[in-house]
Image (cartoon, rainbow, N blue to C red; front, side, top):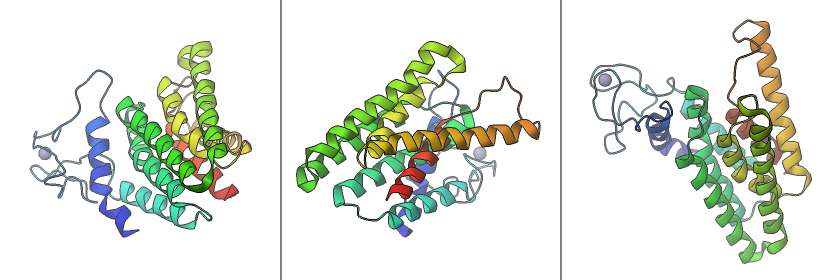
Length: 237
Ligand SMILES: [Zn+2]
């Protein structure tokens, strides 16, 4: 838990850097005064208060939110039973990228390759080490097929529905999510996807009813994919 809170400044930095509109350069400093933000001098911009040290403007996600998400991720890892070292490492790795991705997607509706690709690649490789160190090759093959299958599902909706489908960022996020879910069994990726769809549907409906969004609004799916993945892993674990 303390370790999770210790890495929060790095997670906050990832969000600050990448929560920018498509095509823009990564953010290197405060929007208001330009004071540089880096992990070398994390306070107070990357601390829980999320304020620029120069001008006091808000920097990145609201105070306390990333801290809460990291703590929740740590609890999820701790309560997940029967995990081998490699499997646990894969989950910690994936969550380390998934938490900033949730905030970036919620803020600018993007899932940048610079976060989704290392998330998927590292997860797959760590599961590979788990396969080599005792788990055997079967769950790894399943993880590989499930990751590719889930990614293909999201990519197909983009191809068929265009802007009304999911984005290619969702497909790349699904690569790692699918691998993590597929490791535990064939039905688990399906469960994770269903949970993500139900969660996003419920939230979307709530937002429609309270008139916060319109039918034509495009809601980010990344946060639900991450929540659905963690929920499915906890349910089957
Ligand atoms: Zn500032």
